[in-house]
Amino acid sequence: MSTRLLPLLIVLMAAVLLALGVPLGVSVARAEQQKVVIDRIDDTARFAALAQFVTEDGSGGSRRTDTDERLATLQTELTSYYEVYGIKAGVFYRNHIPMANAPTTWFLPQTGEVRDSFDEALLSRRSHDPEQVWPWQDGRLVVASPVIRDGDVVAVVVTESPTDSMRSSTLRGWLVIGAGEFAAMLLAVGAALRLTGWVLRPVRVLDATTHDIATGRLKSRVAPSGGPPELRRLAGSFNEMADHVEDVLEQQRAFVADASHQLRNPLAALLLRIELLALELPEGNEEIASVQTEGKRLARVLDDLLDLALAEHSQADLKVTDVGALTAERVAAWAPTAEAKGVRLVGDCPPTTGWADPVALSSALDAVIDNAVKFTPPDETVRVEVASAGDAATVVVTDNGPGLTDEELARVGDRFWRSGRHQNVNGSGLGLSICRALLAAGDGSISFGHHEPHGLRVTVRVPRTGTAPVEPRQSRP
Image (cartoon, rainbow, N blue to C red; front, side, top):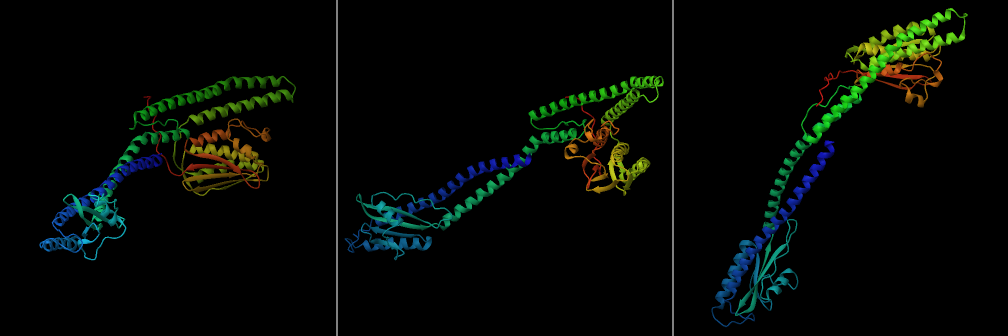
C-alpha cells in the first residue's frame, strides 16, 4: 500500500511546489527586466535633457553658434555610453534624421520594434514596456523617450539594449529557486515517508496477523502500535473478533472431541450386545454381519473424528528434523502391508532437513502412504521420494492406482469426502483432512495432482527453516 500512497503524496507535493515555483520564477524574470527597463528610462531621460539644448532644426542648419558644442557633447555621451555598455542609443528628429547616434552606422529601421517605439514616443509619451524576454530568447530591449521643447516633441531618444546579462541574472535566480524547490522536495519526501510509515504501520501489522490467522496460527494477535486512532481502534476490534472466532472454533473442536469420546462407550456396549446376539442366531446370518460391519465403521469414524479434533487443537512441537530418515522409517513400516497386498513400495529418501513436528509429520506420511497402498492394484508400484525445493523439503508419494478426475482433485482432502468410485474401500474420508491439519500446525502443506500415465501424486511440504514462535494470545483490549 505504501508503494501506492507514497507516489500520490509525492505527486501532490510536487504539484504544490510547482504551483509556487512557477509564479515565483516568472516574478523573478519580470523583476530583472523591469530593473533594466527603469535603467534605460533614466538613461533616455538624461539624453533627452541634453538634446533639449541642441537647437539644430534637423535640416542641416543651426540658429546659434554654441549648437555644435552641445551636439558634440551629446554625441560624446552617446558614444561613451555605447562603448561602455554596448547599448545602441540615438537621438532622432521627427523626420527620422539622426541628431546624434552611437554607433554612427545605426539608423532608424523602416519597420520593427525600434520604429514602433519611435512612433509611439512622437505622441509625447514614453514607449510602452517591452515584451518579456525569457532566458531562452535572444531578444533586445527597446526604450524610447520624447525630447520636448516648448511643449512640442522635437526629437526622440531611442535605446536598444542587449539582454545577455539580464537573461543570465534571471537564469541564476531560477537556479536558486530550483535548488530551493529541490531541497523542499527532499524534505517533503522525507515527511511523506514518515507520514506513510506512521499511517500504514498498523495496517502492515494487521495484514501480517491476518495472514498468520489465515494459515492456521489462530493465537496471533495485532500487537499495539502507533498510527491514527481509527486504525488503533480497528486493531482492537480485530483482536476481539479473532478472540471470538477462536472461542467458537475451540467450542466446535471441544464438541467434536467430547461427542466422539462420549459416543465410543455406548457404541462399544452396543457392539458387544450385537456380538452376544450373534451367538444366538444361525451362523452366517447376513443381517447381523451387516450390522457388525456398520458398527465397526461407525467406531472408525468416531476414532477419526477424535484424531481430527486433537490434530486441529494440538500445538506443533517444531524442530529441525531429518525428513529423509523419517520418511525412510515410515516406508519400512508400511512395506509389510504393501507386500501383503502385492504392491511394490519403493523409497528414495536422501538426507534432507526440515522444520517440522516429527510426530505430526509421521502421522501425515502414514495417512498418505496408507491411501496410496490402499488404492493401488497388485503388481503396481508406490514410489516415495524426498527432495529439497528451495526453502521447502518435499515428500512426493506417487501411485499407479485409478487416480482422480479434475473435479475430484478439487475436493480431495475435504472432510468426509470420498470418491463415488471408492465407496467399497474401507475408510471414513477423514484421513487426508487429519493429514492436512497436522501439517498446517507446523506451516506445512499437502497438495494433490495427476500422476502419468495414471494414478495420484501427493506432495507433502515442510519449511526448511524455522519461524518465530507464536506469541501467546493477548488479553482483549
